[in-house]
Amino acid sequence: QSALTQPASVSGSPGQSITVSCTGTSSDVGGYNYVSWYQQHPGKAPKLIIYEVSYRPSGVSNRFSGSKSGNTASLTISGLQAEDEAHYYCSSYISSSTRVVFGGGTKLTVL
Amino acid sequence: QVQLVESGGGLVKPGGSLRLSCAASKFTFSDYYMGWIRQAPGKGLEWVSYISSSGRTIYYADSVKGRFTISRDNGKNSLYLQMNSLRAEDTAMYFCARDLPTPIIAAVGILDYWGPGTLVTVSS
Image (cartoon, rainbow over all chains, first blue to last red):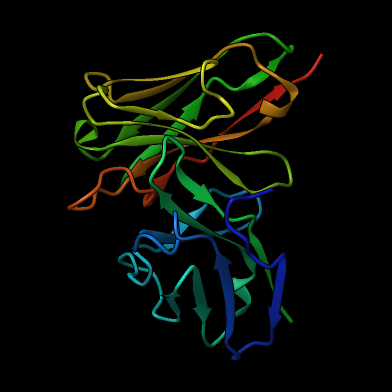
């Protein structure tokens, strides 16, 4: 069982918006603004798309946005495109020897 | 463009050992924390280990503590993972990744560049 809880799957049609949730505890997501989101296409390495809850690395589309409320972080993808179909993982810093915890991942299907 | 390339994966019997390497280029390797993250077939990501830029500070996941050793050679721009007492559940793709520093806390899991990974299979 993963430390952070994500829905197993979400789906949406092209042009729509979807939101993926990531629920942790006050020891990780709720305690620090160090939530990251990664996009992973099949057979590829993960790609950082959001860090520190809501910041986008250079080159990442502004269709990706992040937020947090309490112990739950969220990734929103607006204007869905076919190439957004992928797995999405959240992660959070945790103040322990474990250091970093990941969510179980969410498969996004673009209908 | 930052490049990370892992090597050293393969098939090993339970109880065996393997040493993974990660060759880094196109950035100042000695300035960054580096980490190993793994992904079992069809499963999610699992953080494995971190090492500070100097190599003096190291963190491990509980699942590998006492069996895996992370190290680095800044002169060779290389990161390593020595894996001993391997188990079937260690079977995974192993990725090395660079950690993006933050002003307050180091190694908070912002992994901005990843290698393509190297596959480790533990099976008799």
